[in-house]
Image 1: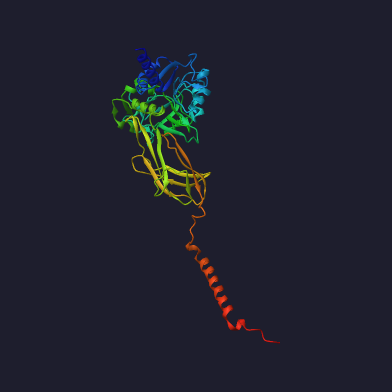
Image 2: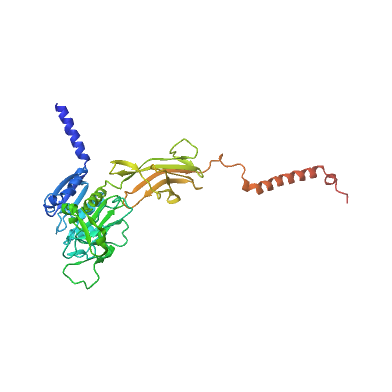
Length: 439
């Protein structure tokens, strides 16, 4: 019985160890109850959540050189200071290590939150500014029209998969992306009639941001596959917004109809699943290459000008099916590299996850790499490389006669024939063998 109990405990420890550890930092302990649906969804997907107030002592992302958590949820927009264990520098190193962070802000966003955002190429608007939209606001907002309605989702990326069935309720601060930051994805933007400004002040200058340039939710995937999400509203993750109805008012927005439930829960669930590595994951397996017509797979050496057949299987993780499914894309490229690419071709796919292509090796021998670097927004980066040697022809592999050398062959045989003819004439001609006349 004791042995059985130890086995059960060991199995439980293994199961717990496999769960992703997520630290949730709050600046108000009541957020745990007001945002319970979002947190319950994380736990239902296997996350082991640890809740702490942002000022609690002893909270450390890193201890003895090892990271204690896989993900960080920072729902503390008004925290004026972050402890050493979760400081701006620590959070940036946490991201650099390949781990994930979700940051929610509000109109009174603090300097530490701004610092983390700036390190990732995101710039929140001035303090106490909010996003206002007088032509696309919810019917429940009878005041300054800061409870806006937006359905400006980023389409065609794996972050959301497909657009939510209802518009999003948003109340908070806007932000902008730093110019030249290609790794950022604008997940949700405001409508064309929105702008960001301080309430109670007369709009005399151009707003901090206006129209679709006002970003509401932005996602970042770094080159080491770390994922960071910045949302300008903490309320959009709340139970209140999850269960609220949506009825856009003002201008053309009034014709969008009424929805019994907002798209916030659907949106935030998909956003969180991507943020914490449950969506948009790619993997590759069964990389094979061989000479055309040969049954030997993945040889270490080829000869120049050999015809090669290359294939690889690429799969995408499906949260809905809880497993890996074939990946479909028409822009996966293969490179044959020796310092620089000598061959670059687009792989064909059969719709079942197998990508393949045939090509001819270059007429340059050396050590090459088959390389696939697939970077697509919303998907994890796929970097694959396999080394192979390409040798020149051996002495007995050259062609003995080639068509282009026909003139040289003809001139050589003509010379032989001419010399043979000259020899016969010289040896057997009577005139050439007669003695010279006496003087």
